[in-house]
Image 1: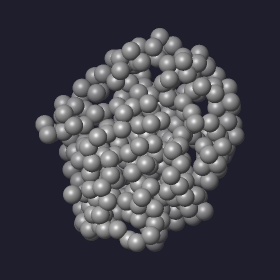
Image 2 (image 1 turned 180 degrees about the vertical axis):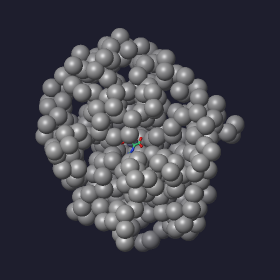
Image 3 (image 1 turned 60 degrees about the horizontal axis):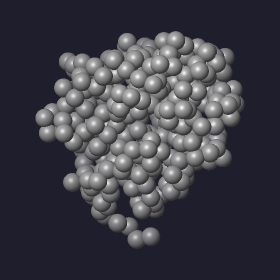
Image 4 (image 1 turned 90 degrees about the vertical axis):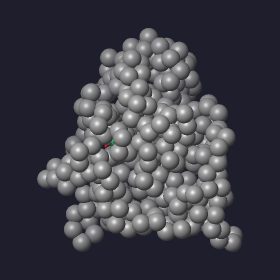
Length: 348
Ligand code: NCD
Ligand code: ZN
């Protein structure tokens, strides 16, 4: 394939995003709204978004924080945070509300703000049944939390201990295996029914686990699920660029303040919203698969969620753009992915 320096695609959506709350929203939202029409808003706030009413007020806070030019173009897609006590009636209410598009399963203790997550998924079976009936997708943070399990094996063990069973017990439930990081996850998604999809981040396709330890510990490359071996990174690139409709874009852009990252107990999360689509263009270009970018970034996600594809277009150009050392974030700053470096593609 001849190298192309320009590509126009349907405006993409981000199917996995963290924007935080209150004074933190304004710094990060424009990065996403500049590139994406819609984004799945993760519900793991300090006080998790567990009800439709909470999702509605979080949505209002997001829209309030958007600059006026985006208020009509950008659509935040809300989610609920599953707990052991989530009620079946809340799922029906969510479907009727229209702005709630999924329910997120965080195994308790798996990641940032997950302490109120699910400690017993069997206690949620009635809710999963209701979700299957309503066509409401279950978004899964697929890692076991047992501290005895090696941190690099947590996704693989989760597949064996939980995910295969859920998929088998609830064949009609739509399941998105979020931010997959291993060839085992790719295999599971490939062999499952059309009801099972997965998001893939740019950072898991650009970095392997060495990036956390290059010349010293690199806290800004620490995220969960943790970066994996090169063979897994390669399996993710292959899946994303294959054209398979089960795989779609989810940045998992997860801003934390510089202080929270450069800390004796640093938070997990990599901020990529400033290159939300450009980083994927770089990956697809390098894999000689630019022609597959539009499906992955703009078609497979809405098709899976049962939402219309966007009508607007965006154009990406092979043109280097400098990445700042930091962006304002509340009264503090967030250090972006590849801080001080370059994006190889830019949006017009
Ligand atoms: C996310 C966050 O900071 O909210 N962190 C991360 O490393 N990805 C949570 C998550 O998606 O696991
Ligand atoms: Zn996330």
